[in-house]
Structures are given as structure tokens and as C-alpha cells.
Length: 118
Ligand SMILES: [Zn+2]
Ligand SMILES: [Zn+2]
Image 1: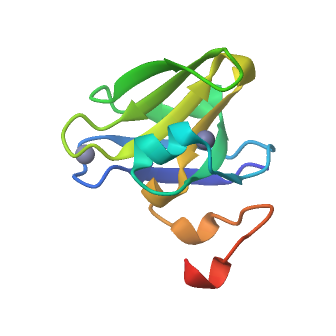
Image 2: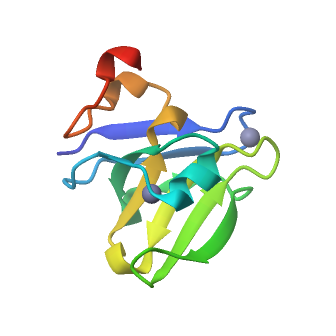
Image 3: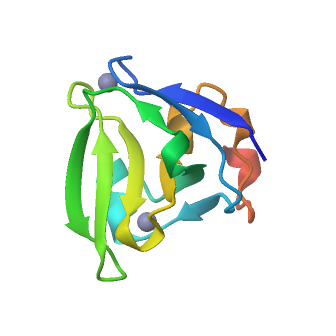
């Protein structure tokens, strides 16, 4: 699959583009996602890590994920939009938040929940 994904933060300072990974998209309800997004969950789209190009302005927050391995959360230092997620455990993937995609209709989680409310 070589579906190109482009997106960026709310204020436009950080832009990215990359290609979809074969890994499934998913919705994550863990505490990290709640705290980082300020909502009940993250909508996550996996991209091929080495296909991603992203603006230098991106800030990265480092934390220990549920797996006990380091997890990196990338966000815009200006508007605070959460943009990327990367884990030591899955080093060939980088995850982007679906809400940051230019075309969010490309997001189709493997298990849609309350999709009509989106
Ligand atoms: Zn921004
Ligand atoms: Zn999560």
C-alpha cells in the first residue's frame, strides 16, 4: 500500500507527509492518549517510519509507555496540536494522529466505534 498521507498542526507551523504502513489504524483509549490529547482517545494512523518527512519545529516529549519502553510524542510548540507518536517497540512505524491529516476521511479504523458521531 502506498497511500500518501499529508497533514499538519492547527497553526500550520509543522507540516508532515509520509506513506501509510500496512499496520492497521486504531483508536487508543489509554491514559497517555487521554492526557496528551485532552480527549477520551487518540485516532492513530501508522506510517512507514523512514517515509516520513516532518517540519523541524516539531517538539518531542519522551515518556515510558504502557509496554515499559520509551515512547515519543511529537507536537507543535506553537499551537500544541499532537501530531506524532513513536515507540521503541515498533521502530519501523511512526504514528500520526488522524485529526491532523489534511484529509481525515482517509481514516478508517479497523474497528470503528460510534463512527456516525465522528
Ligand atoms: Zn501548530
Ligand atoms: Zn494510547
